Image (cartoon, rainbow, N blue to C red):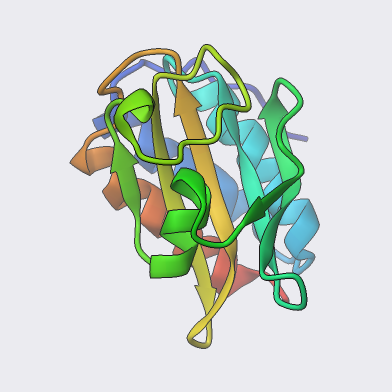
Length: 163
């Protein structure tokens, strides 16, 4: 049984805890959807000042990202590769940290409250699988520590799940 944790609000303390909790939840569980669902829940409860945390999965035949497990308000279901923050990060296969989404060309506003966003690609064997997407109602919410740890969480998901 998972015991809820009171997170401190300090990323330097909370990210290592989130990473270890996700690793424990994934132990012996190869199902990618189940692992993403638990990751979304952990990020939602563990990160301060966010309003959406979840995943989009790459659908190669349509060249789109399709909504996966998440926490927050209902979201856009399909995002063309190259469009918006998620589509851009996926197309370029690199993390996008956007301090002000309203200044980002082509931003897709699924939740009008979102002010900043971080998107981390999920890569497996050199192929795009999807992205981790986290939004915040605060401008300039995401920094290098968020990028570092979310990229580690992405690696953990790719290593520990059957893709």
